[in-house]
Image 1 (spheres, rainbow, N blue to C red):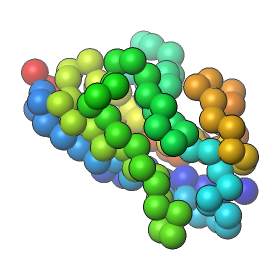
Image 2 (cartoon, rainbow, N blue to C red):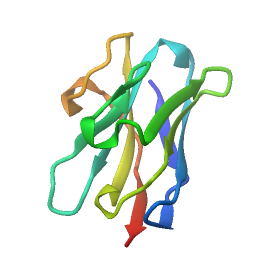
Image 3 (tube, rainbow, N blue to C red):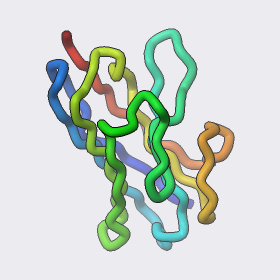
Image 4 (cartoon, rainbow, N blue to C red):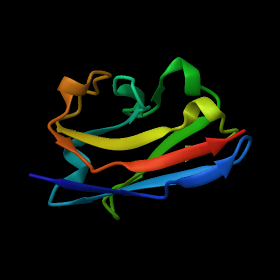
Length: 119
């Protein structure tokens, strides 16, 4: 069992940067595959990034993921933000080393953090 809490969202102008954090409670954080998803209004939740360094095409070259197993924290550094990046961003975890780009691949989810990019 793991609980996830995201933070770091907010309002930023286009071209700006934000860093999201996902803090996990529970043990053996290093045993979990982690990913970031996002959901814009009226759209389905979509994969953003996960695993060691796998990125969806719209964010390649702009977003970077990292994790600190000693702090039980997973990060998403977002640079060169665009208005189309506006969404609620969710952290997800699945026990095991296999990363998935599908929502059904993850058992544990955070509550989400809002990211709004103004033009």
